[in-house]
Length: 424
Ligand code: GLU
Image (cartoon, rainbow, N blue to C red):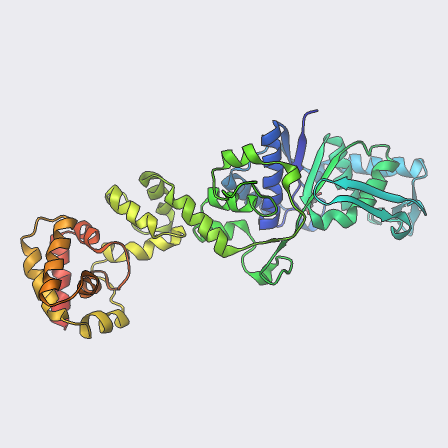
């Protein structure tokens, strides 16, 4: 049997991280089994039936590397078919008119259940399921009907979706039974995403749209890697790995039922790890949209040093701003601590101006000369470099100092040291 899965977002204008996780698990399952993935836009709610609400969803999926083999289909295009199904159910006596709408007749006793891949056997007593609306009084078929009928028509073999759909399951299964179309579809309801207080992830939590994380400097392989861990574990201790390996290891049976904490700190850590694995050129291109100055002119070693200090792509701009600015923006606290109030700052600045005037301009030599100046006044290198760093970069933290001086160049370094000394 060839696996056929689908991702069926409603057009909301953005891709919720929970929906992205659902899309990803469908994609992983399709890729792991050589199956087919269908994308279906569930746009039967006329108020939301606007093409631009779909664009962002498709963009976000594409960014994540989630590709589909069929579609996008638009559910609204199946309206005739949905109407026909309702007529058929009326004709067979499975449905009846009630006050302008049409309801499905639910048996009074018995149970409706299924074996969920994630949660095991789930059963609902039919006595607790009301006769439910399948066509509204305005003639439009309900979501329950359209969603279930479209899955049958598309030959979907595995329905993988969020657990918020579990409560709709008895109705959908009863509907499929009435149509003689229940078949042997496999259902897997993925665990809820929750915040730190274990509440359902909502806008109250912060960013729930995938595109916000993209804007905040998360890279797609990291986002997809992190989403894969929300409800699934690889079975070894390696959580951070390329998507090709995740595809190899992914098994629907390994999805667990307990809710998954969407942890932005962990996402950031996963991101930093993926960023460090990039080659310097890949890192330069990833950073480009996030930084007003291209890193193209910087040597690979220096780019690597930046990479080591980067958690998200947004971190890079402040790391290099001093380098591209006419003059560094001096942090007053850093100035007070390391220069105005720092030990031997004046002697160190004066010494560095003299020692660097004729030094071969490479980091090891700049390092050696400053270490000597420090020794002369009884300071370890860490303390001796503080006023130099503040004079040149404006702050006490940043990329490795001597490599930074090398990149900045002799003239600009000396000018900044002189300006700081004059300001003292
Ligand atoms: N359009 C529904 C949603 O976005 C799809 C649910 C399903 O996957 O069946 O929640």
